[in-house]
Amino acid sequence: MWLLTATAVVLVSANYAGVRATWPVVSKPVIPTYWRQTTILYAALSPQRLDQALPPSTTLQTALAAPAGTALAALAGRDVYLIFMESYGAVAYDNPKAFAGLAEARRRFAADLAAGGRDVVSAFVSSPTFGGASDLAHLSLLSGIDLADPLRHDLLLTSTRPTLSTLFRAHGYRVYGLYPALSWEWPERAFYGFDEFDEAGSLGYRGPPLGYWSIPDQYSIARFEQLHPRGGDAPPRLVFFPTITCHFPFNPVPPYQPDWQRVLTDQPFEQADVARALAERPNWLDMLPAYVRMVEYTYRWLGGFLRQTEPRETVFVLVGDHQPTANISGEGARWDVPVHIVSPDAALLKGFVDQGFRPGLEPPRQPLGRLHDLTAMLLRGFAQPASAVAAAGQR
Image (cartoon, rainbow, N blue to C red; front, side):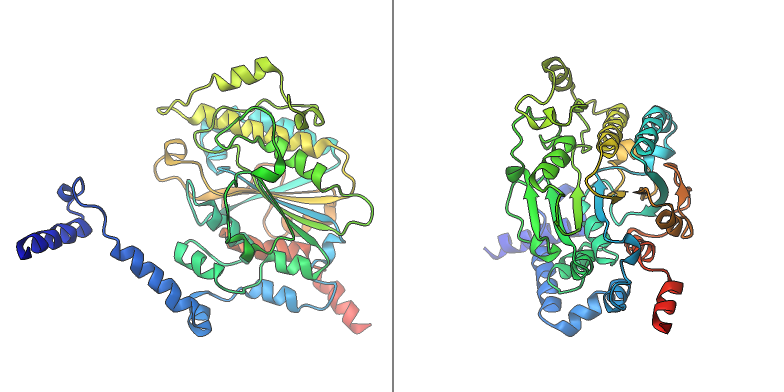
C-alpha cells in the first residue's frame, strides 16, 4: 500500500510539474482548484482584503459623487445601447483579406448610419481576453476595472462595487440585460443589477436554429424592441446586449431579413435561404472566409436596425469583446478590439474625437487604452462639460 501511495504521489507530482508522459494516465491535480477557491473565500470574506485585491474604480465613484445632473448631462436623457459584438476584433482591419472582404460591408453600414441621420467615431482599445471568456470584457467595461486576471473577476462578483448600471440607475435610467445566448441559470447576474433581463427562453424564438447559439442577433434585437416598446413616458434606458451569432465556428451565417416584422414570425426567412445557410459546414483549416461573412452579417443587421425610425434618440456604443480564435487572427495578433460611438449629436461625438477617436468606421491603429479605460472615456463623453459645471456653481 505504501509503495502504491508513493508511486501515485510521484506520478501526480510529475504531472503537476509538466512531465508529459504522465498525462494519459494521471488526471490534472485538483489541489490547485481547491486552493483557488480558498483564495477567493479568504479575500471575499474580509472587506479589507477585498479592497486590496480590487483596485479602486475611481472614475465611477467620482461620477456617482458628482453634482446632481452633471455625470450624464451630455446624454440629455437619451437612451444608451451598449452592444458587445461577439468576436469582433482588430483582425477585421489588420488582415488584408478580411479588410478587403469587408470593405463593401463597411461602406453599406456607413450609408445605413447616414440614412438614419447618425454619425460615427471609432477607436481601438485592448481587450482583457482573447478568443473567448467574454465575461471578462463585459464586466471590465461595466466596472471600469481591469479584469485580465480571472481571479479579480471572480472577486469582483462578491463585492458591492459600482458599475455603469449603478450610475445610470442613479440618474433615472432603467437597465436592461439582453442575453440571447443564455439558456441556463446564471446567478452571477445579480451583480450586474439589471432591472429587466431577457434570455433565450423569454425571447421565444420560433424560427430555424441558425448559428452556434440558434437565435440570430437580428431577431434578438427586434424581439427586445417588441417586448419593451419605447413609447409614452417610459424612463430612459441603458441596454446591455452581448451579441452571439458571430461566434466560433462562424457558420452557418443567418440570412438577413429586410422585413423586420417578418423576422418575428414563425417563418422569418425564405426556405431556400435557410437551406443554403444550413448546408454550410465549418472549414476547420480555413475559417477566415466564414468569419468575414459573419462580420458582414453583423454589419448588415446593425445597419438595418439603425436605419429604422426610432421612437426616441439613442446613443449606440458598439464594441468588440475580443479577437476571434487564433486560427483566424493569427500568431502573435494584438488583443485590440474596435469601438464605434454612434449618435446624431455632433457635439457629443466631438467629445470623443477630442479623446482620440476618429470620425468614420476606421479606427486609428494605436489603441487608446485598455477596455476598462473605455469606461472613463464614456463617462467623460457623457458628462456635462467642466465649463458648464463651473458656470452652474457660480450661479
